[in-house]
Image (tube, rainbow, N blue to C red; front, side, top):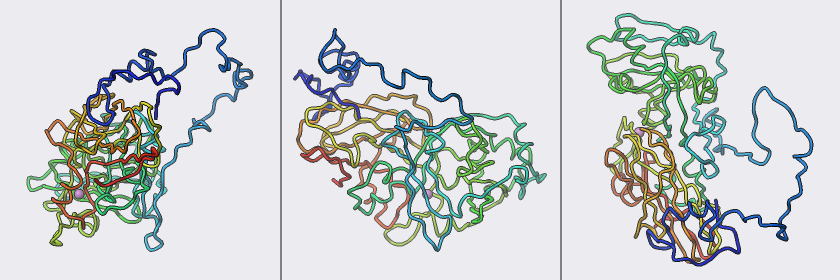
Length: 430
Ligand code: CO
């Protein structure tokens, strides 16, 4: 959180864009430039008492030199948060990105969320094969070195587990953080081979309609993908943010289906079978189906919805009366690019437009911000995204009305962060 320095809280006729303290974006700009009495840094004028101009110890002697692999500052030790393991389900589980401590739109590889169904296989690429077979003219087998010779593309895409934010559907979790409630979304630059190029090399037969993708993990995790998607923008991803994909992200190669539920982007990809119909894998029958109130289930619900989240201030943070904050967060959509993000400080009664701080790429995270002055009264901070297809992020009530509360998948609802009179920020339901 960024806040104004104490002692300079000059009362101004601040432009209000919505009720309960939301301000025009120019107030953060003017603050950054030191104008209008809202400066973040104190100006140094002469030998003002209390300002320490001594040279710190770290500037007086040379530090360590180069290293073979970079590391974090000891003062910035961000971590993924792992879920509880189940002894009946070895290697199953997930870890979540620390969204409330990240900025920009790219998730560092070490902090990208994980979801494993049988742990991380220790794959030597020299012994790994990718087979394309089924309804093709010529079955093909590739090794890792073969694939590195192909022309590749690099695209920035978000990846979100369809179970992300599912806890909000059944309530509770007042202690939830952006990480614990929503940390199953991340964003990276993915480099790889368009899947269409490999499928065309094998030659599709006229009756081909689906592909079945299977990983080399001990769960043989498999998913069926409509051929239209595979031929549109699916990638065989080999690199993530410039380095070989990490073992926990599918090393040496994974399928990547932009904008679709993360489970379909099969990791450790070893087999693609071209088929006429979906193969009804475990993870598209007993799991990753959306059960409705009448106990029927929706199957093959692939695209992730338009969504946004305020990451700061957020759960377990604290704000100070009278201070001005840069309310910031992320937004994304599986249907295209983010066109607008609005923020409310009064639980959705009035809204102000946030500034989009990043590029607005298709199926990628964007970063937004808006200044907010907390006046000490209870507040409820919310964000609401609109995408290039005209989809508007729904309220929690609207999601529950449409799909009930049995389902835990595909919850794009607006997150409400309550601020009480003590300045404590918590997950609330309004
Ligand atoms: Co789904």
